[in-house]
Structures are given as C-alpha cells and as structure tokens.
Length: 285
Image (tube, rainbow, N blue to C red):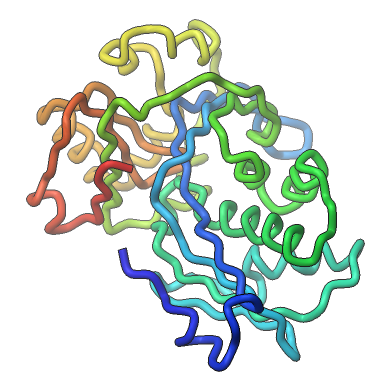
C-alpha cells in the first residue's frame, strides 16, 4: 500500500504540528433487513467486524478550513465530504481553529466497507485528542449518529452486533484472526439505492449472533446479507466472484454491507492472480 507522505502536502511543518491516523474498513457478517421505520430508514441486524484495509488521514492547523484528497477519486462535492461535516458539527459546540484535512483514499468506494464513515469517526477522535476536547466515547458515538448509520461503530472499532439503523451496538467476543481473509472489490460502484431496490423486509431463523457459534463452514446456510440479491441483480460479476471464492476453498464468503466488495475466510493463505486482473484484491486483512 502506498502512503501519502506528509511533506508532499504540508511543507515546512514539524512532526508535532502534524497528526496522522489510519482509518480502517469494516465488513458485515450477515445483514438482515427487519422492517421499514416511520422515519424512512430500516431496522436491521448485522455484525460489524474491523478489517485491515486503511486510508491515511492527516490534519494540521491552517489559516483556513480546507479539505484535499489523493488516491482513489472521491465522487461528489469536496465541500460535502464527511470529514468536513464532522469538523462543522464539532464547531457548533467547541471553539476549533481552522485545519487542513488531507485524506489519502485507499479503501474502495461503493464497497460496503464503511470507508467514508471510518474517515469521519477517526477525524473526530483525532480532533478530540489534538485539541483536548475531552469528549467521551459515548458522546462521540452520538455525534457520529448525525453523520451516518455505521459511523459510530468506528469510535470503539471493535466487533459488535449492530441493531436499529445499524447505529446501536452490543459488544461481541469475536476473533477471526486465525483465518486468512481476502477482500475482493470488482470495478463497480454499488449505491445505497441499488442495495435497497427490491428489498422486502423479512424474518430470520434465529438471532444473528447465535449463528456465529456454528462451524464457519455452516455459516453460508444460516448467515445471509439481504442486500446481495438486489446488488447481484445489477452487477452479476459479484455472484461469479463469490462462486469462484467457494470453488477455491473459502469456508465462508459474502458481500459486505450494501456492496459491492466481497470477503472470504480461508483456513490457509491463498492468492488469486486471476482475480487481480480485473479487481482490487486485499489479502490477509
């Protein structure tokens, strides 16, 4: 992975003035859409698990509030970036100096990996530390709920069962470090609208966390992502990648969140050069 060097952006600055953090991605183990809420959102149940695919986020005090980026091109108006929204949200309650935020984007966009939410949450934690705001983790989570449904997860950044809109959590004792994880991102962008098209909320056999106690080989028969059907309908290559992963020994494979990235768990280290020809592939994350 290539890391943007701070001297490329912030010249003649000392290390003490510059703060760098590395926001990580997450995967969803299962995602059940339960019902549509009166506020237009959906109640859901999913498990968030942090993974080692990372962006680089750098902050330094500046004469003016500024956001720049490198790496993967970020769509949309830079002035609407979630990082700026975090700064403006905190500025309502705290007297913050202007800062220059630089984001080197490496986590794929439209992947269901939570990269934008992670950037926002990590910036909040960085500002809390840098400017000694003394905001508790509980309060930072509350701030994050104004930014996005999965944003609050990245404050504590530990495995959880997520419920309501995906923004309230119960901690889980879950460790997948004994397995080799592969994340595959095809060259498509799955929007939230794509994911929710055709979704019909339905019940599930048993609470999601109970399925975790089954052998991982049995997860594919019990743990589902309700977004897969609608996203695979628009992007059939996602189904082909999933089939490939199972054919090559995956114990469990699934789309993450609203897609389009897939992840798979293997007993041993694997590499798939043929997948790398058309997709971004992350190994051992």
